[in-house]
Image (cartoon, rainbow, N blue to C red; front, side, top):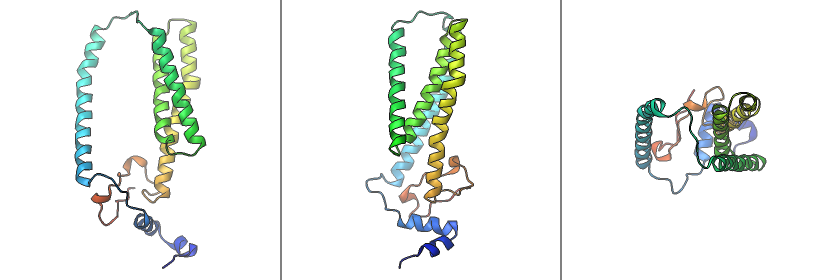
Length: 193
């Protein structure tokens, strides 16, 4: 049976979503749903433990770190960080230009690097023109670009999810479950709103 464009256009969003999911190829080489669930559980536990352990460490650092510290390899640290930032900006530009899905992780990571760059520039600046330059750079360049680089890939990911019938157009991306084929044997991933 072959569907016409008119028949597809007459379908409800749920019917289109079901059709898309039925026609989507089953990925080969994925771990079982049980393995995915176990990995998800243990990764979440490890991340939670790391966050809990970081709280007393942060309190300890706040109480013991000196106000002023002379760092070795200061130039190499900043040049290395900026080389990493340039590389990520170029990879993101390339992925965006070529319309590659690689733009999702590179754009997001580049945005996070820009937030870190703005933070450390402002926090390590001396008083006066050095601090003013760091603040202006952060507010006018780094943070707006970071917002674009973080929000852009998230909006694209949401668009792709809507386009493939994974979420409703009026739903939020963070409510979308990750489809695991063996977890939904009838090929019906719950659609979030």
